[in-house]
Amino acid sequence: MLLERHPGPIATVLFYESTGKLLALNERYSIKPSPALIREMEQMLGPDTVKIK
Image (cartoon, rainbow, N blue to C red; front, side):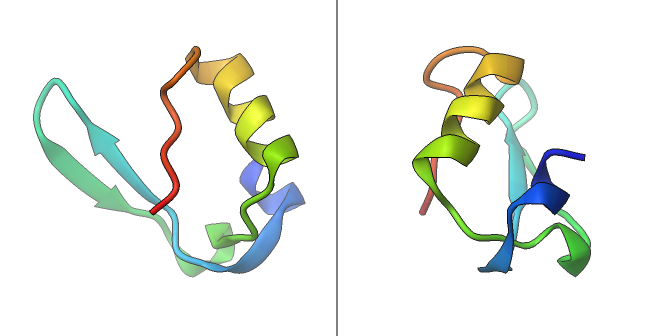
């Protein structure tokens, strides 16, 4: 899985705009943010869909 290839200390939380709901993923999907990770995620999800806070 994409997130598992970029392990790190940052929790991953998904936000669904259509419902306004958040989904916190298991800590095994914690990431180390990087331009490569964002690029790969946007290739899957579409441009401007990934936000790091």
